[in-house]
Length: 364
Ligand code: ADP
Ligand code: GN1
Ligand code: MG
Image (tube, rainbow, N blue to C red):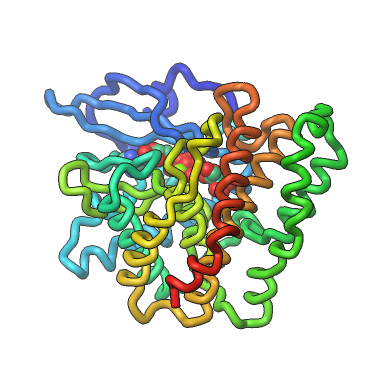
């Protein structure tokens, strides 16, 4: 995706009042290009999130935005009915002047605008139990809400997104192709993935047999995809709705654990600092189960610990496959970043394997 330097001819397609003052890159997402736009409206600042959508991944963008529109409309109606403020507790799509949810400038160049949700923060790491607990409440409540959403209305925008068996096949292909001859420098990491084949079918097979119910899930529940109130820490809104698709609560729970129970950044180079925080696992589990109440089955609960390992090893193999393939999927800001990201994931997997029985026992 090209870097946009002049937004005037893009943002003038949207229904936004005031005068554009500035547009700066914003946030730490790996997929889309996110910017913060500031407008002056009668002397007051009004802010917007502007995103250049990764249309190679989310194809066609029409289907992606249809999913987001349907889910946000559904959520906003629920929030309103409960006396809440939909512009604060949900994403709000700003439409184009011709009524669309996105603007297509040319092939591979698509933009959308959301209202910036003020007085909130999206954290990159967990700094206290309370924030993580509240993020669990936010994702748990979101999952509960989505349980009432009609899955047949959604496009499966990235098929097999968390099909770890398929991810493993993609991984093996990246190793076999080794287009940049990088495999020799990460043999240990490649072996780590190869030795763990016994995991990869476990969740998909349980879904296929009906043991674990297929639900509408978020599928990308990392901490920086939830906004917390910057003063009280209380949950405000779940964001980044690009991957809402059929999935399982075990994926959503597991992905939050993968990201939040790492005390470091996802790309930390010093692995001695990367230690799985079992104390935070307890905190998140408590919040998630409290929010879901009876909205989670016993079989789902029984597989939450497994989901945590699965999401972590899957993410690690995706980072490694991308490193081997030339860093074309996850945005990078320095050489070797995807390999470092993969290494933190595998360190977390090793830690979780050692206490897997305790992780399971806690759920019971
Ligand atoms: P990506 O798909 O690339 O991860 P996100 O939609 O998660 O992109 O946005 C990246 C970051 O931008 C988020 O982590 C959050 O910090 C911020 N953000 C996104 N949408 C909003 C919003 N409506 N209000 C405030 N901040 C937002
Ligand atoms: C990506 O979009 P973002 O940065 O929230 C990725 C997730 C990975 C995550 C790893 C659509 O999430 O699947 O788990 O990076 N999203 C997509 O940090 O592939
Ligand atoms: Mg994100």
